[in-house]
Length: 207
Image (cartoon, rainbow, N blue to C red; front, top):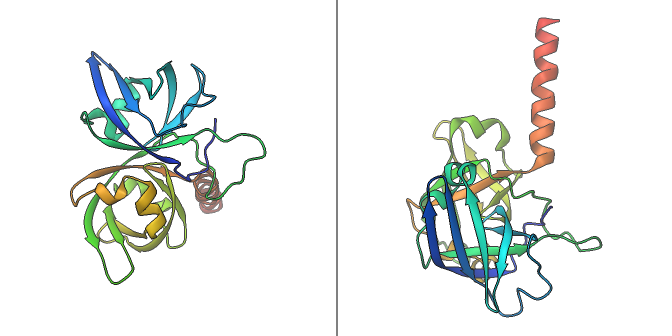
């Protein structure tokens, strides 16, 4: 399944059941979000592709496996947390953002929130392993939101994103504070292009 990175709304985690290497969550969903969804469907929850295990009138249930708990923010998520929601893309849907898979790479941490007039800017710290994929005007998915990278500081391992009012209205980023972690996915095309160039350069050097 794939998604567009255009969040449809937010939900609230109403219950978390934790077992060894497995957690289950119930997410209260917005009005009409569940319409047409079936058990087994894929939903992007805070940028993570999750499979619906149970459908209630106003909520959905999901299981979180060990890899999801280890790599994403769901390892430390708490009840009453607000999460971004997007249903999987259907053939013929308009792609307003960029194609994302819901396979989160890692988490990044908000180091600064700036609010100049009519702007909302997040500065985020990333692990050095992601540095090669992050550059100005590149695309990333943050908590399932398709965003364009602003500035990148490779010395400090930070980058910025600019949020428009509509993004703040529809997503959970407006609720985030400095120090909070966010799920990040690198756009597939960016990842493949960068990795291919690196391999070509290696072959040129050793050829």
